[in-house]
Image (cartoon, rainbow, N blue to C red; front, side, top):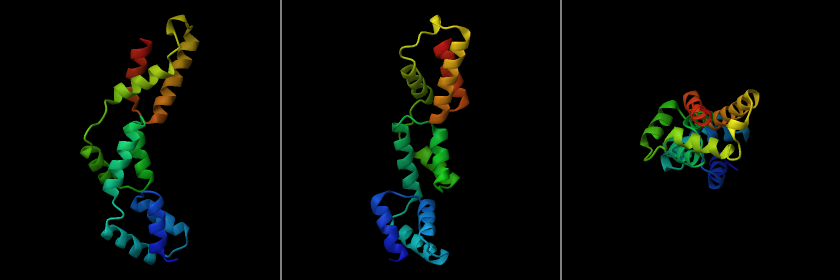
Length: 153
């Protein structure tokens, strides 16, 4: 199977960035010249488009309650250029309030927790738990500190 056919089969199963496609074809053993030609054709036909990919990825990540730091990091890992990521972020129709999303997630984590009934050590443990979860979701340190301050007081 030639590289173009293999690439089209891969795209049939999932949307891909140029970087992901390049890596996929390398893993399948194609030489750089054939990979370059295949990617050029896919770009020409509109089957690969990092701008559209980044915009869709951002929308999906935001819908899942992820922070922009995580979304940007994951796009970078997928081989999307920084300027393309920035353009995608600017083109979003609606960017949810990061504090509001993080606050809602933290409140959901602590729905049955009463900080007033906790000793200092337990309160600190819960704050650390919230911070780790929100950091893992990709929220900024500033947002995390604001959320913890609002919840714990």
